[in-house]
Each structure stands twice: as structure tokens, then as C-alpha cells.
Length: 457
Ligand code: TYD
Ligand code: MG
Image 1 (cartoon, helix red, strand yellow):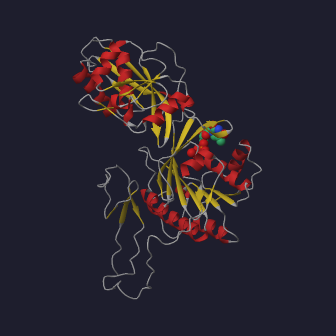
Image 2 (image 1 turned 135 degrees about the vertical axis):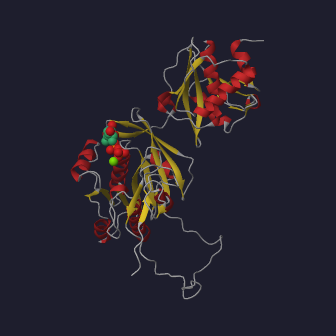
């Protein structure tokens, strides 16, 4: 008998090696490699030829008729928006997020809504006892919703149960890391268990036309734990984000085989569960006072949705020759270093003896490059102790040459700002003509803008 090969699998990236190592050679994570059950010998050995003996499949043109799968709207508009119009029959959706962010709450609310609308809904919790889920449902005022609830972790038990009678329209599995398939060995949560359980559940969903939702935990680096593999298997991947210390939560589509990935859903976590936030800007703007230095308002764009956020900067002069700190919350550190370098090299402003702190209010994370000018304005304002007008918004991308570049969706940003009562906009020169119904000042270079702020010639 051939010697059984040992198999070691990295629990972080899924790479397979033949011996144990302290550090994964693929993803460089430490202590993530575990021994797993040896793989079964494949029935296909080299002598098989795959070019015959199969069934001929039908090849069709791109212009053939399409039967679009039906969508189930949950009635929670922000969730439907992130999904691209609702859950799709016979599809699999993965929702990832930090523990305690509100995944179970959101899915319980969605499940209850669909159940009350007459759909058959099953909610399987592998993390909480049925009583705990029931208690939460009651607290959310959803105790009467006809959701079929179970606390189980065996995929075989779950699928056996659901195969009896009509399959549910929506099946929620909370979470995939607690599920266990007896087809293979290994503890729940290992890559091979997650992959096998996921595969079985997804197969059931596709065959029976059930919309499957898998909850996935997230590792500290933000990817869905272990099962990168899972992201490839499902149709839609949603990320549920937010700071636990803040109220707001953003549901973002990362992958969507049935729609776009540029829409977000915004929620607020309250005592009565997650409530929808139709107007996110109101959430992130603090009370603005005239004459405050170091603060600007930036119209960020999330997909096609503008969100107004406040950017705050603080500079502290250091007397000694110590290396000054740069601390950033909600923005990219490298990008801050770049803006500081441009301010120094192109505009003659020195931050080298000052500590610089940058913060995006409300715990929001800005990724939009159009924030450059707003950040620069906040920095200049903090350093010079001159306020940026409180009724102005600022946006534009800054090049290393000091030039202020145009950015996408100017009109959309201006419209949102006008809606919230802003009257002025500081923008790239080339965009100053865009009609947004407000007073616009355009600048071609950062030096021009700095001169304007400091009242220099
Ligand atoms: P939960 O949905 O259990 O998070 P996850 O499933 O992502 O781990 O949410 C847990 C947190 O949400 C918990 O810390 C308490 C808070 N919460 C509220 O503030 N209000 C509510 O109505 C509910 C149900 C939870
Ligand atoms: Mg949970």
C-alpha cells in the first residue's frame, strides 16, 4: 500500500504543503499551518483520457434568450440596494464582518421581513442557542415573524431536514465557520471544513432555488477568515463594516455576479436593531461652527452616492528636535505623507517641526482620491490658524507636481452639498464651470490655493 502523504494546510490562505512550517511560504502568516486529513486519491490517474466517453454539451450564442432569476426584495431598502435589488433565487451570498458588528441582527431582520411577506424562511444558527435568537427577535419586535429557526452545526442534518417538503426561499447560515461536514475530517472553521460545508450548502441552494446567505467571520486584516476559497464559490460577497464604538454601519458589495459592486447600504445600530439611514451625510457631519480651524467638509463618493464627511487636522509645534509624529485615522498614511511633501516642496509650507494629526469624523474611512485637496486645506488651516469657510466644501486630487486635478462626478458632489445647505465649493480650476447652483472657486495648483488661504500675493 502506498504511504499516505501528510497534508498541511495554511488556515489563512489555504495553500497546501507537505510538511509543517512555522510561517506560511505563500502568505507569510505565522502559526497558521495545520495538519489536515490526507486528500483522497483521485479516480483519474494519468492513463485516463478525458477526450472521450463524456456527454456532448450544448453550446449557445450570447444572443440566446435569457431567463433572469427572480429577486426577493427584503423591504429593507439599504440592504436591497447593496444586493443590487434583493436576494436572487438559487444564489449564494456571503456576508463578512467583525464580530459584534451586527451581521446576525441584520440577517434576522431581513429573514423576519421576508417571512412576514409570506416567504418560507429558515434561519440556522451555529453560534447561538435557539432561545438566544428568539430573545433577540422579540427584543427587535419580530417575535411573531414565521421564521423557521434551528440551532445546528451539522450540514448533513440541516440539508436532510430542509430536503423534506418545499425548500425554503431564504436560508440563513450563521455562521459558516461553525458548520461541520462529515464528508471530511477536521474541526469546524478549518479551511477544508469551511470549503466542504460551503460547497454542500451552495449545491443545495442551486438545485432547489433557495437564496442562501452565509455569515463569515473576518480576520484582523479584514479578509473573510480562512475561506478566501469561499469568496470564489459564492455569487455575492458583502462586507459589513463600521467602528463598533460608532453607530453607523456600511454594507458594501465586494463581488456581485448579478449586479454592480458600487452601491452601499448605510445603517445605524440602535436599541431597536439596525435602522436604515437614507441620508448618510447627516450622520458624519458634526455641528459646524464658524471660525473653526483645521476642519473641512469633503463630499466623498461611495459608488454613485455622495456622503459628506468632515476632515479634521491638528498640528502641534515641537520645540525639541525630536521626530514629529504623524497619526492618521480614516485615511491613508502614505497619502498624508505625499500631501505634506507637496505642501513643503511646492508651496513652501514646512511641517517638519510639527506633529500632524488627521482624523475623519464619525469613524468613516475615506478612499476617494478626491479628498487630497480637502486634506491639504485642513492641514494649511491648522498650521496657519485660519479657518476654511464653514459653508464651503472642498474636493480635488493633488498631483506630485502640485497641480490640482479634476475628479469624477463633480456635479453629483455639488448637488449633495447644495442639498445640505453648503454655498461655496473649492474645486480644481477646470471644474469651476460645472453648474451646481453654488459659488465656486477654482484653483489650478496647490500653491495658488495656499496663497489664497494665507492671503499671499
Ligand atoms: P450581532 O448581530 O450579534 O453581531 P454579529 O452577528 O455581527 O457578531 O450584533 C451584536 C451587537 O449589536 C451587540 O454588541 C449589541 C448590538 N445591538 C444593538 O445595539 N441593538 C440591537 O437591537 C441588537 C440586536 C444588537
Ligand atoms: Mg452573530
